[in-house]
Image (cartoon, rainbow, N blue to C red; front, side, top):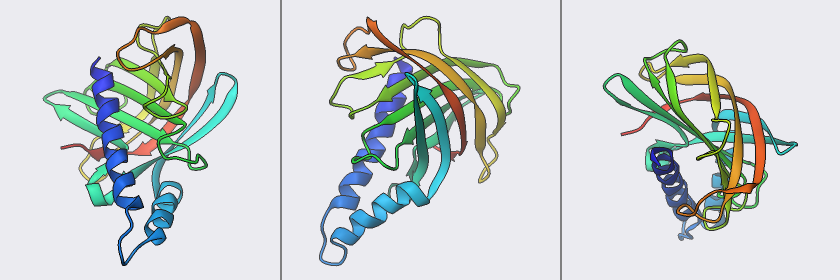
Length: 195
């Protein structure tokens, strides 16, 4: 359930950005929408490449300067650090559609750090529609790191992941074990520290 909290927090950031970017003001109008869409595609800070149920996927992670936030971040609490990546399809009609989320916890600050609590979720049509989650799925999701740095101003992560995702009608429902899909891929992204 901890991973779901990170997913919800990340979507909150994106929703706030969408509201700010798409609000019409006398000075910006549709120019803000155009800049927002361009920011997703051109100002990304990373990329996730995957195969989802046999189909190719490419999503971007990006920072949200107006919200002082990012869709690729980390939060440390003592020796434990939670890393959250939310990749957004730059070609999707909505920033909230076709989102792939990868979360995990490390105990340490480099690629050799023990990793636990991996979770992967896929939101084909946004948060208000059914989605696919690795929660309670077998086998457990796998994440391996090639590189990890949590250095101030130069944090980044690269690695691989694989998971079995099962359909959930909403965040509070049980996963449907008869409707599952395999996902695997790679990620590479700068990270921003969450406050």
